[in-house]
Image (cartoon, rainbow, N blue to C red; front, side, top):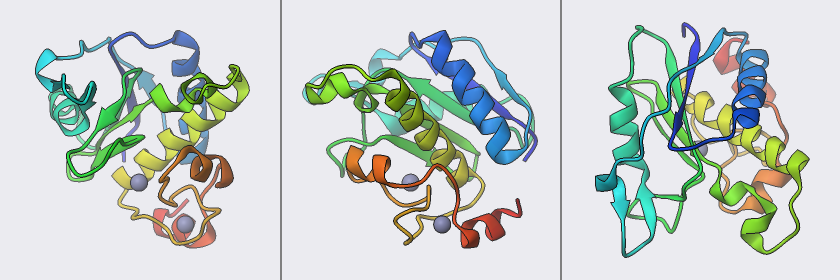
Length: 174
Ligand SMILES: [Zn+2]
Ligand SMILES: [Zn+2]
């Protein structure tokens, strides 16, 4: 890997961009830069589901790739889906090193609860590291504390730790 590029897809808070940038650079020991905002394409919107197709956004993000071996993390405020699931927190295209996460379900407000900025940031960092972990070739991990554990619900995200387990760490070589 040669650095990570964070790209906002649609309007995204500057705060969260900075927080993710710091967290990713610490977790992977890489340089992280942020790119220009990419618009949310109307053709990736599914009006019936009221969600955006994660894979369609990933394809568009892939076109932003300028540097060989640089990984991309797209960041969006809208809710994402893939056809076989109700929603996804994020998705990764391992071959091109392109990933995306959605912030929509990471806010307490989504679940009818009072806002909690610290928790929101913690969740975004976990999901961002998880997707970049996939882009580095990691599969889902069976250890429930490992960041590569699959999040079926926000409870899984909250329960798992902020880092990689020993096995995943070894695979990554960090
Ligand atoms: Zn995953
Ligand atoms: Zn693991």
